Length: 564
Image (cartoon, rainbow, N blue to C red; front, side, top):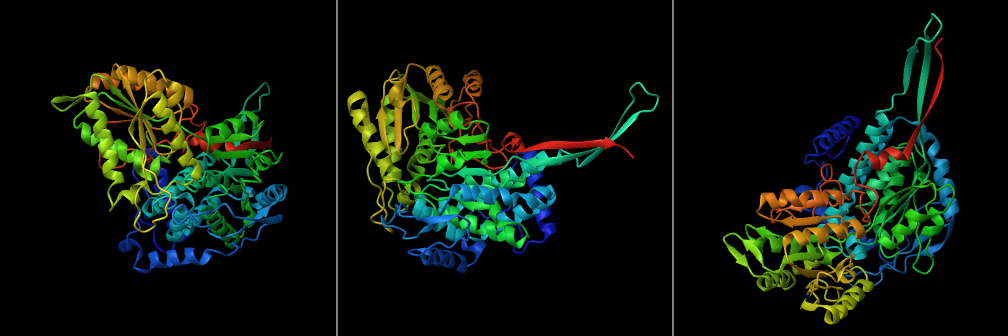
């Protein structure tokens, strides 16, 4: 479905109905444009988007919000140019933001779910208009390649936002506005009551965004909160503020145009030296926390949130188990591409490769363990060494500290394992100073789980030789239960093996992809169809997107009286 350039209320209603049907069927759907092709957007759109981004550099970002106490932005340094963006943003007192958010909720909470849905769908399409500019902003803060930034901060993120909106709408429409209730008790005449049901939002929400995918997780949290009547305060990572700030400005403009208080959406910035997240989420009037980021801080939030409603997506120790394959080289190429994509800074990137010591059957022959290892290494080399596409696939490393992770794991690998492939820079002809790194691949003995058995953020992969593929499944699923897993990958041509393995993944709350070896990125997560994170292991306590992600954000208060 493609939405018209200028939407009417009827057009937005059609989008809502189509999205409702998509989540019912869990089928492919999107009203947004995923590709930056000029055929879809016209010749001028790419150029104008880049020009608007360039025009923001070196200037203050203007946003009219309450409680300004200073300016921040010094941590925004492009991973492509290694130069500061030079943009400064207002820093606001958290107490002022929470109070403004609470005050803004009155008329918004009182309006109907249909009206809120209408405004929010308009908001999503307004955000889509900025996608080319947002893509450049995401590139030069998060470090993604342009195409990934265009889709990951554009259509894919907007789809997740619409999906959460739809589930919020469904949850509220399950609650009628009124009901007439009749029941006979002891008296001859039955009792008849008129009842009214009031959907009451919990209160202001703090949305803590991650550095590498600033909008993909922010949009579903944003629409889930707004759709259920709550205000939302977005707290971007200090090194990746611009995409979130632009989105907040657009949301505020749409809300004001629709006659609502723009303080329903607010921006809370900070700096590495003076973080604000704990102060914001500890405020007594902050009632909801949406968090994406490190497992350590996510666990702290879960343990210290008190009576606040908390939704987290943190980290996973994602695994690949090879039993057999129709074409091992093709399967290896698919998972290695997922590991190389954006230098393994995606939460669905595979990290641990379990390979039987006896080898992997591929078609009519058995590929010995050492040959299988070399196939993995060669697949990485081909991507990293491809001057035409390598830089687009690997993109950049967002933070200097991630290169430190690579160096630390390499040093440990030299002591505790075997270095199969060393990390190396990836040539970028357009940005010669870009911070780049192709994956290091390390062999580790199975029992050294303290080494490979947790997420090692960045382009770091481990090959673990196991006696059997069954052992690989056991170790992979045990790690999922104890350390978390967001995406798991299994390759086998033996249906009996697959059927015996799947219950272990399901019990671990580890979603698994079986025998996906091409035609799509193996780690792609589709809105309206794929549940992202299960909430059943330490990788996060919530799933994008289901009713459980939205329904707790409001409660129902009833009034009843005898019918007149």
